[in-house]
Image (cartoon, rainbow, N blue to C red; front, side, top):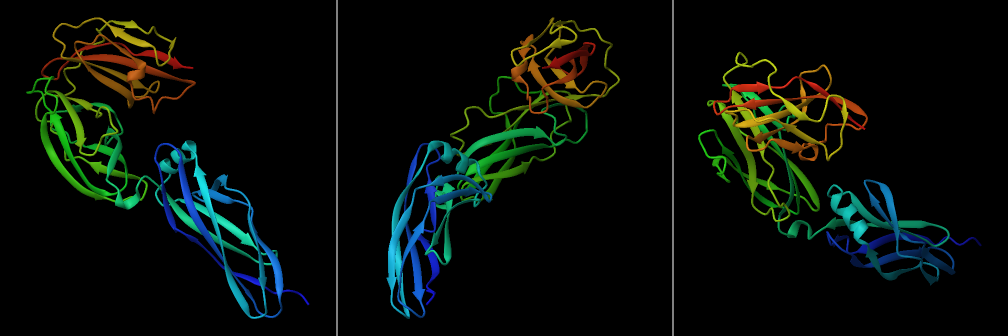
Length: 351
């Protein structure tokens, strides 16, 4: 007679687990396998080769080892076999879990009695999950035209965007703060442009996007903008956006600013230094990088007039590609936001 025993269900306890964001973790799990024999006595081996860690449906690691127990059933009898194990999560796997979208990480085991199979899964999260304190671990700022530094005509409308990475859930408390041309460049915090209170929810790694109100453009000159948040212990320094407001485009001079390095056509690296001569009356300088022959800025940086050089590593390099050539130029601005110096475009190559 052919045995007809079945694995009728597999469950796991707990059904969700949290791992350390940094360092190794140990997960204590109990797998419960229920079998039923409808007709004849059977003795079989119930086993599972290993547990599987999956992120977004893709297997990233095999965990644990073989679990097996013998099961003997009489006709019309059922039983539940319990398998206890401790799974080790390495620091490398913990980093992958922390970087994964919340709810996308699963650990599963498939059990078989050589005739039928059953599967159980538990969800895995980084940190303390929804019950833990909100933690902000990254803030990225840019303007709504994707620029990291900008020159805006007086009266024009521009907004900024804060992309925020966080863990756990809670009330995000933030402030858009700005230093306008009437303030000292040494004013560290500036004035509050807008207070933000937003509930954010994640069982692991979360991300949210916050748009600023329309930025001030009534006065000519240099503006510094930042988004300050509570619970940002993991951020050493808040990013700052810089923009200049100009009266208009009619005051742009001819190319009259002398740059010292890099030379035209130079191969550059992150250690390349951009250097230039002082322009009397300058309040700030702006380096702009373009695709050759185009006017849209792909990267750039505004610095105080006390700086006459800047390393390429100080730029946002996200939009610069190895193996591509770019144009760059330098402009100088006075206290009123007028362009008082400009260099001709030069070519650089990123190997």
